[in-house]
Length: 72
Image (cartoon, rainbow, N blue to C red; front, top):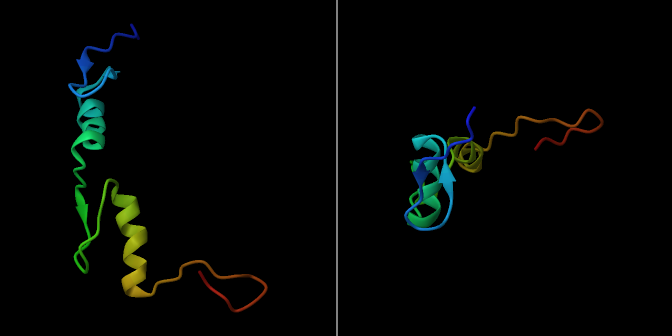
């Protein structure tokens, strides 16, 4: 609650209160994308984005229109 941000990015002026936040931020500079698709060469910064991408390969369309037969 002190507002102290002891973890400094070595690439820019950003500072963080928690080391994990710094490690996550550093991926912006390194280009590291930890979540890789098993079916194609694409990679993502966030697991949720990978999960959404995987629908391209599975054809999953979890949302259905209440007024017509279309799904997306």
